[in-house]
Amino acid sequence: MAIVDVTVYYLEMLQQPSRTVPAPRDGLMVVHARNPSVAYYRFLYNTVGSDYHWLSRARLSDPELAVVLANPRNEVHVLHVDGTPAGFAELDRRDLNNIELVQFGLTPEFIGKGLGRYFLQWTIDRAWSYHPRRFWLHTCTLDHRFALHNYQSAGFAIYREEMIQREIPVASRSA
Image 1 (cartoon, rainbow, N blue to C red):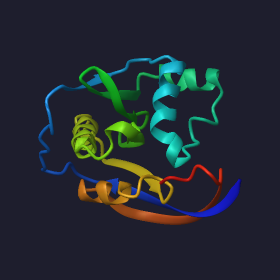
Image 2 (image 1 turned 60 degrees about the vertical axis):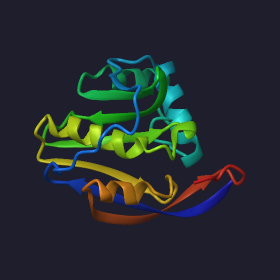
Image 3 (image 1 turned 30 degrees about the vertical axis):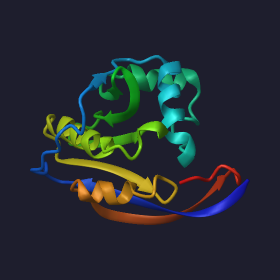
Image 4 (image 1 turned 180 degrees about the horizontal axis):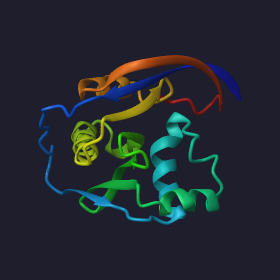
């Protein structure tokens, strides 16, 4: 294990952007996974986030995660490409004025195919359909190297930065 310095960026969007992102290909479908099983959620979470050392949901026990997933104001949306899960977005709507994009990403084999921009816009449109005051997220320097740029290009603005230290496995850092 190694201790690394990490910059965490907190971003927000205070109004829905007026951009349209067409589907980059046929065969795309976003499915709302209502009350997904813990096993399915962990499959998505680990497949998307393991290269970036995601921890927030990994730290939860199965019963704790089951409670989160059973909350109807916690939404999990799965992007499918020709029936195969290609990524997911998790929206926390417990505070109707401040919706958080808790998780967002693609599985490794679907990165670099133009799907992220499309799926992020789909997710933004979904969040704004609830008419929040603010839509926000955080990302960090361990995430994909284009994550911050993609969020800013979609209309999010940084409102806070902080430096933290994280312990990560030495051999697996691929972000």
